[in-house]
Amino acid sequence: MADTQYLDWPFLEPRHKELALSLERWAHEHIDDAPHARGQETDDACRALVKTLGAADWIRYAVGGTAWGGSAETIDTRGICLIRETLARHSGLADFAFAMQGLGSGAITLHGTEAQKRSYLPRVAAGSAIAAFALSEPGAGSDVGAMRCAAHQDGDSYVLNGEKTWISNGGIADFYVVFARTGEAPGARGITAFIVDADTPGLEIAERIEVIAPHPLARLRFTHCRIPASQRVGEAGQGFKVAMRTLDIFRTSVAAAALGFARRALDEALQRATT
Image 1 (tube, rainbow, N blue to C red):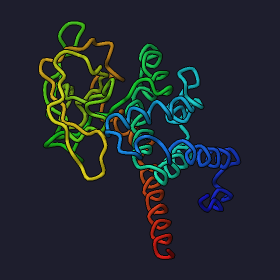
Image 2 (image 1 turned 180 degrees about the horizontal axis):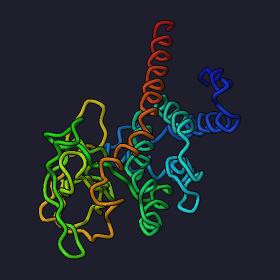
Image 3 (image 1 turned 180 degrees about the vertical axis):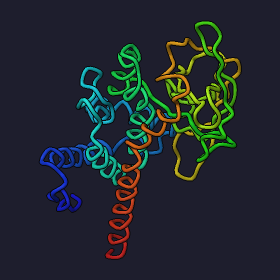
Image 4 (image 1 turned 90 degrees about the horizontal axis):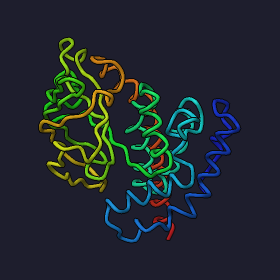
């Protein structure tokens, strides 16, 4: 088992230590020998990992609200970091599967209506629905204000047109939280968030993107994609705030995952050096 002395540090509580040690034991048994380690296709491996993590109740830590399947009323950033560090040390794809369930549904946790939470969050926590976060575009990566994907209201619906790219879980997600320009104000102040189910007419997977560390990644295209106004997340024109609040919860955990990768690399290097 990896060194766990850091779990006694004062900014972690006893419940955090219990969480990390329990996940370490579980991951050793269920992740190290999982099918994805034996050449399973990436999409299928990711789907299987989401189901496995959900069935074991780990994804609920990435969902807020006990009524919706979450482990607590609010998402515990320290717990998220411990989970990502541990999963990343065992499997990069397992870490990805866990993190994207939280990031992809975070806007619903934070700003969703009760009906939206009831419809999506329990399935996310259980691993029976795969979530995705669709913010970046070909010409708008870190500059969200340059977003061109647009949505206009038409009666009791919104109609989306445009593209998103580098979307994790693209192609396998059951729903996407999509950010589109709705024009209430210039720049980042005129953006709104929407939930778009994967089978909605007008949404297509325009391209699957291959990367060195394999995980589901795609470019999405919206062509007169009509969704009910009830699928809007938060207030119109407040999508930038919705996106940033969601990212803020999970940003710290990126460093935790990097630590997990680094610890695994060190362990592998030391093992190779001594054999």
